[in-house]
Image (cartoon, rainbow, N blue to C red; front, top):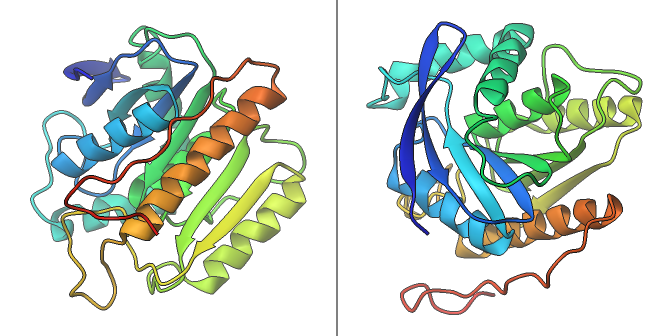
Length: 256
């Protein structure tokens, strides 16, 4: 799949995105982790989800075209501010989604998928009322400073969390579950055993106690999103092709 880098304007800011065009049954707007959309990791995940969800994918971030973070310390305050003011963040996400409308080649339903900081953004986008079938947060902060109640959100929510992740606390998961119950919406929380934070980051390795790649959790997450997309498409009456089967590379060995 050939990808192209595009620059687009939302509000008064120019943003970067990587576009993976495909005549697909579903569109995925993807928000990567703190490193942004111009990394080998975000490219790998975009291609993985494009293939196995039969999706056209656009990957973008909140930093703007002029800013590519060199380390987490450089963007820590930016991320904290975005999560501390969810109403402003939701407004920005709405502007980004609107600005990208002319980019898509497919016209299928939209799913928003994010990883780490991007997972928090995926949920905030769904809370903003952006028209989408569902939102997926993968090792992201699931709760919000401004939780919704009643029937104020119509998207389905899927949270994929590593059991050994010290950064996403149980009180955040309980707050998310309480919000989902109050909204009476379609939601699921999957706990992936023995997985640390950033379990989809293949380049991290496994030597850190808090973060590390897990082939098992990475592929379980992809299968969960594939199933999520298929279920929601069928729920809306779309004809769905048989899902692709996840295959490991020769270097990765067998998927357990």
